[in-house]
Length: 172
Image (cartoon, rainbow, N blue to C red; front, side, top):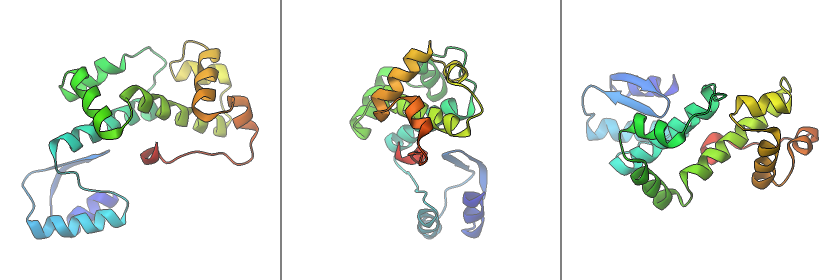
């Protein structure tokens, strides 16, 4: 809503505003783009205008949607999802992502999954077995091992902490 409001203030009419992506029916003027860029930066957003950067953001957006907004209890192959959604060969997406981000798509995906697990642990509504199933892990042991590898502590230790160290999705 904040992005849509800023677009309207700048006199730019969007066709759609979705997570990480805006579709416009016409190109904004340079002045509109500058003003919009400053307003969006103040809100913590940025305009990405080159094709490779947009593709990187689309990869991140698809992974965030998959991890945080989709039931992943059924096994899904990340490479197939990204290839299908972004219409590029997975090896191209993987190489581009690694070159620009300095990490692999798989590591980014795991980091997002661990942040989601942290969120679910903090909510304290599901047990570890239910969380493992919801997040598509083959077992609680697999979830626990991956959680410890990423965070340095077990899920149980994390859950017992009074202060929960979670990251913003953009910082993962």
